[in-house]
Length: 140
Image (cartoon, rainbow, N blue to C red; front, side, top):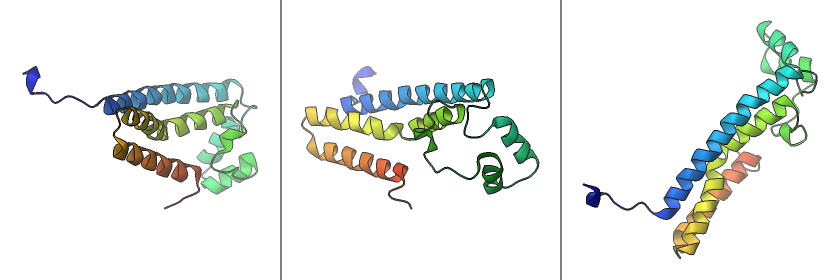
C-alpha cells in the first residue's frame, strides 16, 4: 500500500509546515493580545470598555472609532502600537493572514536549491502579490 503513494516534494512539505506553525503562533498571539488589553485597558489604541459600550449603544464602526480613538488610525496601526493589547492582536491577525507569503519564500528557497527555477519564480511572484496586497499598495 505504501508503495502506491506518491512522494511529496520537499518544497510542499516545508510550505505546509511553515503555514501550520505560523498559524499556531498567530493564534497564540491573538489569544494573548486581548488579555493584555483587558489587564491594562488604558494602554491601548481603543479602551476596550468604552469600545464595547459604544458598540452596544448601536454606533456604526466609524462612529465607534471617532468616539473612542478620535478616528481610525489606519490599516496597520500596530506598527506604532505593537506593545498595546489591540496592536499586538492586530499583529497576530496580520501574521496569520500573511503566513502563506512567508511559507512561499521558504518554498522558493527549497525549489531553488533543487534547481526548479520555474517554481521558484512562481513562488516568489505569488509571495510578492500577497505582500503588495497586504501592504495596501495594490487593492482589488
